[in-house]
Image (cartoon, rainbow, N blue to C red; front, side):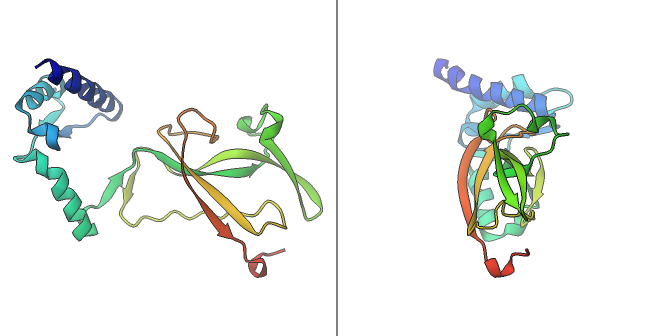
Length: 194
C-alpha cells in the first residue's frame, strides 16, 4: 500500500490541479492504473464532489487503446481535441512604440533592415501564437497567417516552432517555452511583390 500512495498521490495532486483550473463536471478514469481498485477508491474519495462525478468504464485499461484504434481507423470518431499547449512560432515583429512589450528590451532584441530605402526596426524572438492551451480544435482544423520577409535579399524564411503551457506568452525566451522543431520555406523571388 505504501508504494501505491507515493505513486497515486502525485497523480491525484495533478488531477486536482487540473480540476481547479478547468472545473470539469465529469472525470473519465482510463488507462492501466485505472484498473486498480485501490486507485479507483482513492480517486472517488478525493475527486468526487456533488458537482463532479468520476466515471470508470468497464475495462479502463483498454479504453485508451480502443480510442487510438478508432482514431487510426476513422478520424471522424473524434470531433475535436483539447490542446495541452499554446503553439506558435518565433518571428520578428515590426517595432511598435505603443506596445509595452516592445520597449525596454536589451539591444540584441532589436534589428534594423532597409525596406524600400527606409530603415525599419524589428523586435526579435516574438512568439506568434497559432493556437492557445485549452482550446478545442476540430479535426483537420487549419490556421493561416501571412508573413513577409524582413529584407529583400532573403532566399528563405525559417519558422522555429515553439510550445508552452502559458496561454499568453510574448517571447520565445519566456519561462516554460519549449522549442519543438523548425520549418524552412524557400522564397520564390518571382512571386515577391516589390
